[in-house]
Length: 330
Image 1 (tube, rainbow, N blue to C red):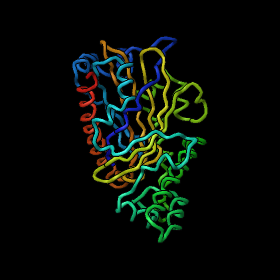
Image 2: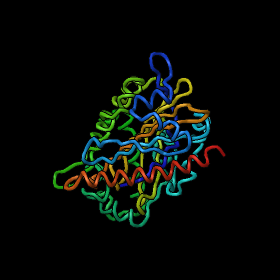
Image 3: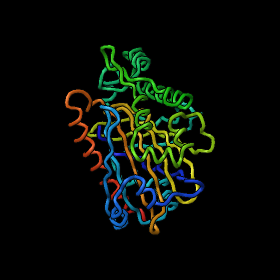
Image 4: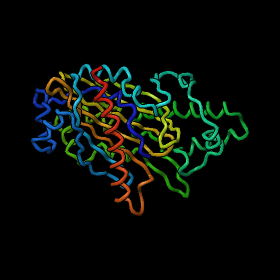
């Protein structure tokens, strides 16, 4: 549920132009409502949390502001080379997906014995995030060897990539929960994108074309750079399979990107992270917002569970980004 964003490696690029000019770090902080003293605190190395309100009763939300003592271009290069993956041991496997290739590119994806049992007995519920079609495909493999189950999972993942690539958020199949209930993760991503936060307002104002891509992908994607990846991650002791779409563009020395986990195999539903990388004092000021959807905080006591979960998420992100601060310039 509380998976730390392990693939911030993809948080690279899009500038925030304002009336033909690149917005400065100071201007953005003022626009986001930070007090004047925050800039100096952050430039001195402090990680500052920003209060981010959830958009649904399933959402955990965290915002962070921090400084890395390397310029944005160098930070982007190091992140692209896999810096955060190297400092987060919970990522077990990671690879780029060629959207025009098939299941062979997922040949290294293997399941533990516990995972195999779950998929072999796939059903609607909370154990796995599966659509009705995916459940039926696994149930048709009754009595088949482990290799057949793993191959079906690979086919499911490639099918989800193809559906999302063709139809964006509308291509994300809902998770069957049983009793006629579904989790429509696409709706959570839409809510995360259309949030009423100051950061979303800044995106709408300074990067309206990119914001439209966030809402309407694949419409309007000309001019952006995008990447699809898969990974296995150890979340709260459980292996999780994740599909991620990162889309980006660049202009000048300031950067921002959207990274969207549009499929997660279990534990939580989806995640969307947006970050701005702006030049400041010879380094990079990072403004980061994470919204993670999980059924585990919905229902009775949701407000309390969300508050606790969001604080834990922010704390975990702080630990990761503190490591980033210490090693980025090496």
